[in-house]
Length: 211
Length: 211
DNA sequence: TAGATTGTTAATCGATTAACAATC
DNA sequence: TAGATTGTTAATCGATTAACAATC
Image (cartoon, rainbow over all chains, first blue to last red):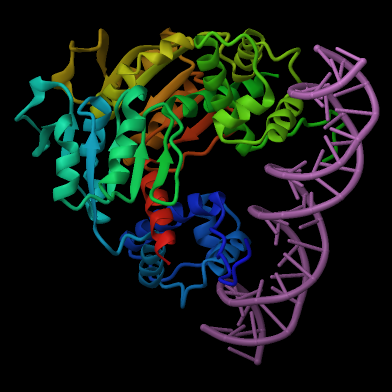
């Protein structure tokens, strides 16, 4: 089906993964008091080439100048962190708590407002000042509160169910740590983080060296 | 400098990240009692095409047949998980504990033998049955014990120091969760996992949709 | 046997690198 | 001004897809 609205194809995964690194290093340089940045300097820090930095910035529409403040502001816009993001975490286990305790997120406007767990013993307790609610109340909560991102740190078997509830609740993004490959669709953006896959990739590279 | 040993170039990152997913899904199919696998079926599960599965397997040297046992065995070899991996975790915070409590690792031969933390109050305590040792004893520990992989869950400022100690201690791999980009070198393979970068990538994709 | 699936080569597509005139 | 750096186009390189004879 042809349409005349020219589907702007989304940027490549490789680039999407480099952008946060650019942002992180620009912030560091800003904190170091640097008053100017070059594509070469930034490239060296992220482990890149200056040509790629310039090409990436060009692909993303270009930035006015290379003052660290300008760059930070421009990257913030690209990354969508000029607006606040309200999050809830599903699962109050160690990983859920680890994510809640990453206080860094707040600086970029990510707020964790609640944690859900199906273990009744947690009822009424808090993690880092954030209330633990019962998992059965998730749908009501989503209906009553603004939630942009749901973080799934549950076992695999309930992840799909939470994805569906998230979609119905109008959530726009899922950050999934359960070991299942949830798929993005037109309603929701999903980002899977498979920690054990990550360890296996490391193991693969280590093994590769031995050959 | 020309050499006649034909440097076998390492496999692409994209492929290195797909291999664990193949392995995971083959294990699932095995658990489901499937007695045969096709490139098409596997592709559907990992979100791929059958052509890519076949090309990937070809690139990795090819597998004898598509029985799930054969595939699992072959992928295990590629991923280097036929041998045991002994690990230590640096940092007994929430993330360190989350990793220790991933009991799945054991099934693939990853053993966490100790946790190190510089907080003296932890001395003598245990996490999931694993002793917490003082960070100052890391070098001695590495000298006296076999450690294949060091997991860094510390703040950024000590990560580089731990990398150096790991190299001196003969460690072959580092799985780094500190928000610094540690670099692999000829002594050690480093795999950086930047959780906050991952969240920013999700945020970027969510923002991209709004345009 | 016929239909489906694989292994492998070739074609396509996209991402990275190189180049260089324009700008700082 | 001269040297360095950028923005942008073109060239290269590598990864994905397509194709199809050989095999199951």
